[in-house]
Image (cartoon, rainbow, N blue to C red; front, side, top):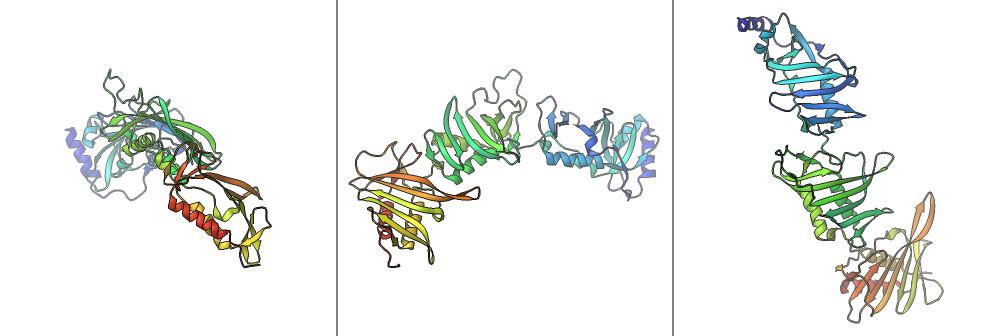
Length: 456
């Protein structure tokens, strides 16, 4: 008899198309008045979204809380505040709810107002015979809403999570240390705006590669969340003694606040594929893509080989004002000045008066020095025998509206009798192996730059 009654209601009220007006609010709350929301599905853990300070946290069942994605939360709150119904089915008994797909309901949303009242529970039922409509239970009431409204509420904890590993606004890396097992293996840091390798030994880092390496970790996202471990299973995710630990020092936010983050990498995950990881002091175990872990492991195994800068110099040629050579034959210094036709260069050598030299020749020498790449990394110190050279660059720097000159780089070189060239940059703990052809090009251009110009 109840089924016939429900069928009668359906025939009476659902013959026409869905209502054309905007309808009436279901919850009657604006977004700021919502303290928490729970999403319940039969046989699945309840998803809870709750305010935490200025943001929201999300949890699934009894699992740990984690930060929610602000964009996803804003959209979800909008869906709650804007949910409307077109009409209400009158005189519905509790025994009739099954006929509307509301006992049990496939999806229920419980909204907890900031006032402490509630919760207000909406249960999504079956679609109505009329196109574009769906039954919605609100307490003991049966409402008719849009058939498409349910999709905006069918959200998992994963959908709502902030999937960024570090969850920081406008972060910029300053130091990255990677530990394998219990030993600190490699470290790279940005010092006074310049990237340098600090472990296993000090060495200039390629600015692009170092920045990319740090950003790869800084921009990492979760690929999934670890499943519940079997009861009594010891170290199910391999994080008791992590295979890799990465410590990141950075600044974040408009005030560039200094913060530190440490992430541990454990065993491999099959579903989703990747590696289990956890932020220090955070109970949530998540999964990151294997390429990130492989990049960190390769950095350890190769002593950051891909980050080493093999450039002989890293000055800006256009800012150079003095280029000084100390060779076995004496000292030669090139000074930039403003000539009648723009930039010009003079040379002082052997204590003599300055003479004008060819601008193109000097600047060709500068660009050659700036583009010369070593073939490899050598020993910790220069050989004790051979011809000694020192090349020093002075740049013009603007700071606080004032211009000053600063001696930026000094490179010491030793040229053996057989022509082997080793270079040691200031601040490095290892030498560079410079190819014979590259060094020959430098010395040829040095000789050409020393020729006196015919210009007055």
